[in-house]
Image (tube, rainbow, N blue to C red; front, side):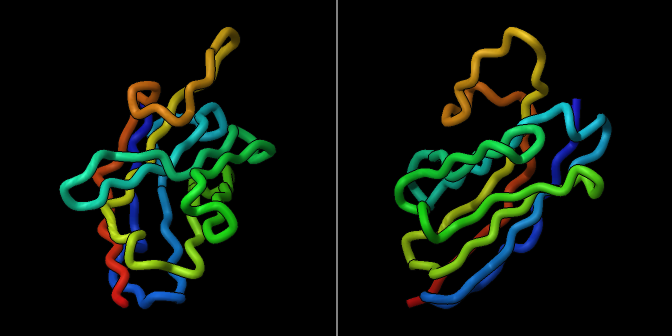
Length: 128
């Protein structure tokens, strides 16, 4: 089990930038892969980005590809989501999620049901 806390959300301008952080505690963070998800008001929670245990593999949803960058610093037990060229449609509650990796795991990194650790979320609002 690992505890996750998101931070860095708030008000942003269209075309501007924000950086979200996901701080972890409770277990060795390098044993976990991490995904970012977002839930706009009144809509479903959707996949945003994923990063492997050592950062060698990343994935992005089409709407954020080329604008968002995921990274991690295992020494600091933190995963980041750098959001550039913000759009009003990026407005949502952003969540980080983690799952411990072991031999035999099947990766379904875009599905909320695959993760068993979730943060509380942080609100991102982008004005026009």
